[in-house]
Image (tube, rainbow, N blue to C red):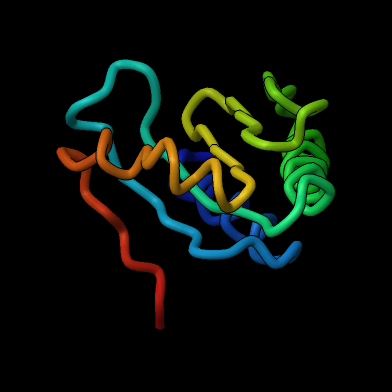
Length: 113
């Protein structure tokens, strides 16, 4: 599966669990770590964990074993799928850390139809 298709699958996983304000960034030209970042948030620790669970389940269906950090706390969960990295925040933590500013050199992909 190419990185664009993986990105779409992970955005769908986030959306399926009602993640809010899903933002994607194309950083292929500026990053040696990954091709895409996804940032989203949930409104409770449990919802944040549920979103991460769906990402893990979808990744495993694709024979990808993601590296997941921060799951127990449920405030900021990082899911690393190599070509796509997903940051799932609890709302207040997303606002505090404001990761979007770090990816300002990457191309924001507007997914609204």
